[in-house]
Amino acid sequence: MGGGRDHVLNPAFRLLAVLAIAAACSLLIGGLLGTRQVAHVFQLLRHG
Amino acid sequence: MTHVSNVFFDLFSILPTQITVMVMLAVCALALLVGRRLERGLAVVTIAAWFLSAAVQSPDPVGVQWGIFTVDIVYLLILIGLCTVERRVWILFMTAFQLLVVLTHVAFLIDATLMQWSFFSTYYLWSDAQLIAFAVGVVQAGWGRWRVSKA
Image 1 (cartoon, each protein chain N blue to C red):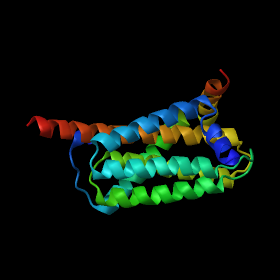
Image 2: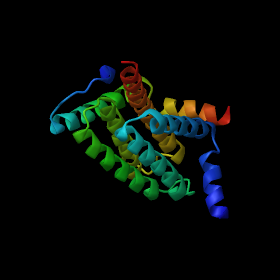
Image 3: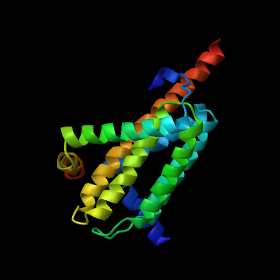
Image 4: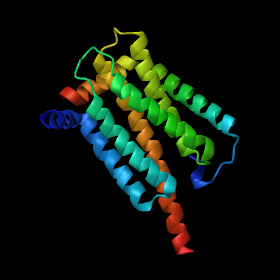
């Protein structure tokens, strides 16, 4: 995540980057695991 | 007082929350110790947001969590404000994950058939991702500080 360096970018571009990260992560989790599977993992943690 | 103690008992009542709260407190404590003004300020806001969320949590298993929703929107607005003026990359990730937390609320509002447990599972998932992003920021700040002190 940037290796500790500063990244100077336009604020509007940074907000677009936020949207892109959110969309990518949502698709990744939704596509690979699916909400039910994620819920199942947490259910296992809850009930053992 | 009993209500307050019940709320905080609920906060620590299940394993994912117990682990996440401990990690959150550890990351925030580290941020207060080694962080710059950004990390320290964000640590205080994060602790406040988590405990406020626990305090306003509704015990209704099928109802909408309006209190937590409000806290999360305020927290998101703070992060959006910070990420437009701060140049660090990790805060973009933190804001993105908080946006997904808020969108989880919106999904629950749109589809009331989603069970509360599914809601909290997804909620914890993005909260954990957000904590990881914050931990990266804190480690970077600590590493930078250590390098400066060595030079």
